[in-house]
Length: 173
Image 1 (cartoon, helix red, strand yellow):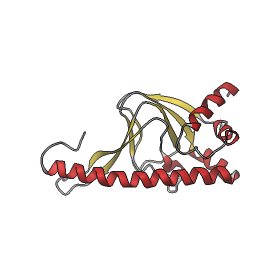
Image 2: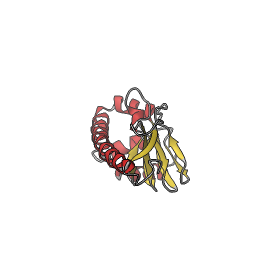
Image 3: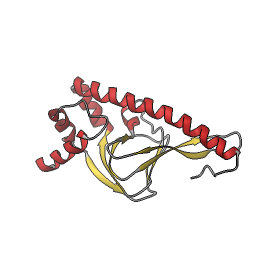
Image 4: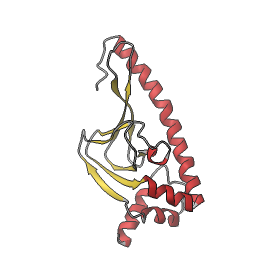
């Protein structure tokens, strides 16, 4: 990868919630990981599936990604997939690639055409193990993301359940 490409990736990492506490030289180490690259997905394209092996951490560069979760409602005989969060520019998804058991906790589906930066979880874990400062800062930030996302589905779920009970909407949106 060229120096220019590495610097472009560093700029993306600087705007990302998980890498805020890191210095430029730390970000350059991450940007230099062998497998790091950008991918573009079309609207309605699935990037990762709930409960499937999680191999990559994703940073949203452009677009929007919806995070979906299968839930079983008392009113329904079949589990339904509901949107529980929306990832915006500079945010991550796929954090499960860094946390055992390395299985996706949500299905990630593009709400519109989106560009993401893809970081292989194993490579990033190895870097974090070798450079404890990077590991500490990244995992501290990941913990904040996880905590935030654990609160969001509860509020969304109850609102959706009440709407479904009142016959206002379908949970398949």
